[in-house]
Length: 102
Image (tube, rainbow, N blue to C red; front, top):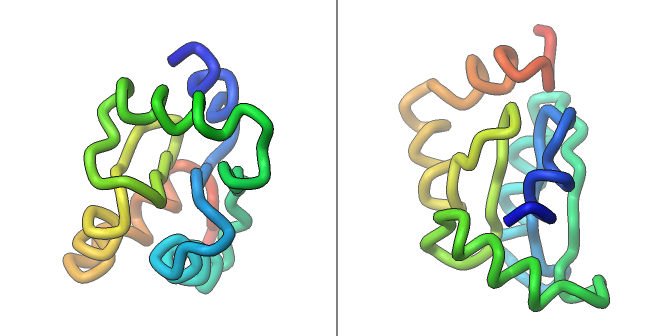
């Protein structure tokens, strides 16, 4: 849990992902399409990726990868991010976290 806090500190958008996951790719593309430059951690490419994945579950991530943090707060997985987008709440959240300005 401490590792997750350290990795998300002072970053507007953090995505924990797997390089081969199509949903992770979709969420990275969606968030980037607004002009945000998310910090992405590909768990399958990190030596401690399995430990980080367990820590994400302990932190409250319920739906597997991707796991998205905006403004150092756990937003959730692909379903939660897409739901925010459909409701028109994703862009304001990104602005509030200073991930985008326009």
